[in-house]
Length: 80
Image (tube, rainbow, N blue to C red; front, side, top):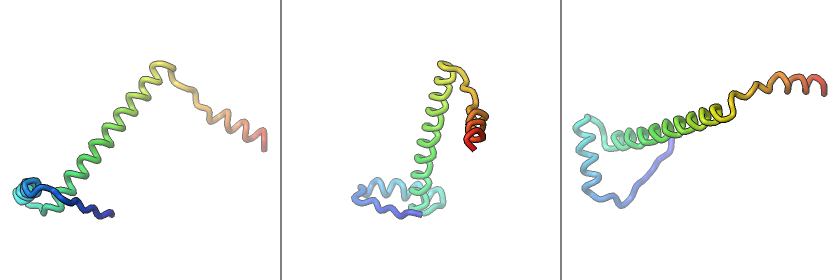
């Protein structure tokens, strides 16, 4: 796991998250870890959705591509 140090945060920002953490029964470190992780997960999900839409667009535009595996295997068998 990586360590990250964030410098020069305004006191009110730290205080706001510290207060939230206390209300949730968590440490400030855990609260910030949860927030950063949630943002990374959100970005990953958005990328997955964007890629799925791109693939759908390609399929709609060009149709389903045939599986090239049998042809590749046949070429390999021919070449030994």
